[in-house]
Image (cartoon, rainbow, N blue to C red; front, side, top):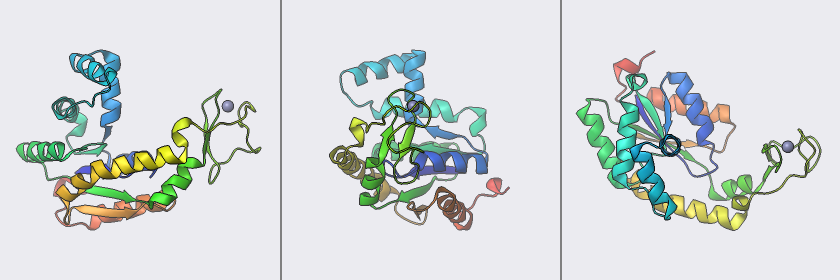
Length: 223
Ligand SMILES: [Zn+2]
């Protein structure tokens, strides 16, 4: 099974990627993580990507596609994989469709974690971080034991620059502009929209339900 996980910043996508990955026994692949790993390992691809990013450019589809293919050809992806952060453009989506067809894999299933934009703004602007140990809190659902200070070291918590409302709104707008056309590309029965504004366990149950009850279930994924 090939799953493509979509959702706006702050929707809890990383948590769901981990839960779904361990449930299905398939790796969760984040293209952002892959790119960072290539840059750190100073591979040819990583060096090229780092040069582009240093000048403020976006790493092109060709590079991202090549990096992704290299990863999904590892043996741990034989039964399928979950992609987080890919495809990001319609061109990448077209490339992935072609690649899956060429490997005679079923087309990807899309899970979209839907959360009201205002809820995301509220969630993210409630984030606080300890400037000393880096621990992240959320005043709404993961507050520190003592108000305003870190559980570990008593340091006064701060709000990170990118957790301010105007910046959050800008990021959400950019996400919608970028992802809208990709979701349109996939529009149809393979797209499952899941209510992401629930506790993580419930979101996961909804995802599991959507995957199991969807049509075109390939026999190899039956466990
Ligand atoms: Zn701390």
